[in-house]
Length: 499
Image (tube, rainbow, N blue to C red; front, top):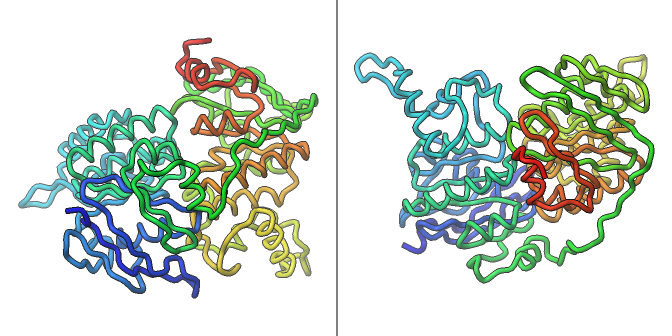
C-alpha cells in the first residue's frame, strides 16, 4: 500500500526545546525514502523514536494500517524495524560475529548453549553476501571506522527486518564502499524492504532514493518525489535560502615548512612514508579503506609508535611519546570516531568543550576553576562555531551529530595550535554546516595553521585541499597539486597503479 508508514503529529522536546514539532508525512512500502535537513532539524530524533530509543511526547505512528505504540527497542523490533545509527552501537570487546548476532544468538534448543560455529557461519554468510572483507572472528575494537560501519550494516540486515533505517550509513565510507552500499540498497528494495535513508551527501540521495522529506528546525517542510527535485531545490528547502557552491576556493600556502615526515615505517602497517606540510596549507590524504593513512597520522600524533623514520617540526626532530606530548608541541587531532574516541557522552556541552584547555583557565588556590572563565570559553566557541544547544549544562549526547562535531573542533581550537590533523572533519554534517567548516579551514589556513585532512568524499577533498598525497597498502603512491586534481587520477593512485 502507498501509505505503509504514516507519521501523524509526532512531537518531542528536550529541556523544553522542541526537537520535533507536529511532524506528519507518509512513506510508501518498498520505497527508499530520504529524510533531509540541517543538523538539529530532527532527523535522528525521529529515527530514534521509530527505533524505540526515544518515546514521542505526542502523535501516532501507523505501520501497515495499524497504530503502533513503540515504547522501547523491543517494540520497534517487533514492528519489523531495524536501525543503522549514525553513531555505532557495537560492543568493542566482542567479535564481529558476536556483534552481528548479539540479539539473535543461535542456541541449542534444549540446553540453551550458544552454537558458536553456527553463529560464525551465519555471520560469514552475510558478510560474504555484502562482500565485506572483515574476519568474523576479529574483535570490533581492532576495526577501522569504515569497517565498523559495514559491520553495523550487516548487523541490521541480519534481522530480516521489513523497515530498515539508515542514519548516515556512508559518513565513514569511501566512494568504492558507497557504490557497494548503493547495490545493497537496490537489492533490499527489490526484496520489498522499505528504507528510510538519512544522508548529507546529495549525490547519494539522488542516486538511491525515490522520495525526499525535508525537516527544518524540528518542523516538517515538504515531501516530494526525488525525480522532481534538483540539488539546489533540496538545499533551499533544508536551509531556507540558496547556498553558493561556486565560490572560488582561496589558498594561503606559504613557503615555510611546518612538518616534515621522512621514511616513516611501521612493519606490516606502513612503509617509507615521506611528505611535507607547509604553513597555511590544507593537505589532503586520499586512499581506499585500509590504505594506512589514518595509521600514519596516528603515529605522528603519538597514539602509537613506529619502527623507523624521522619527523621534523619547524626544522627540529621530534618523536611524540603520547598525544599530550603532541598537544604540548602545538599539534591537535580530530578523531573520525566521534562517539567512542571524541565526546564524553555523560558530560555537559561546556565540560566537553573546555576539558583540554581547562589547565589554562584561571584558578584560585591552584585548584579551583573559575566558572566565569569556563563559561567564557564556551561562549567564544559557540559564537565562532555556531554551535546549537539548549543550555551549557545539557549533555552533549543530546546534541545532533553535527553540533557534537563542532564541539570537538572547538575543543581543539581553544588550544594554541600550529598543526591540525583532521579525520573526516565534515562527517555527519549537513550541507549548510559543511560550508561553515570549509570556511573555518580556510580561516585557519589564512592564519598560518597547517592542516592535514582525511576526506572519504573525494568531491570534498578536491574542493577544499591545496595538495593531496594518495596511499595504497601503507605506501604513498602519488602526490597531486591542486591543478592536477581529478577523481580518475586519485583513484588510479589509490589502486596502486600509478599515473
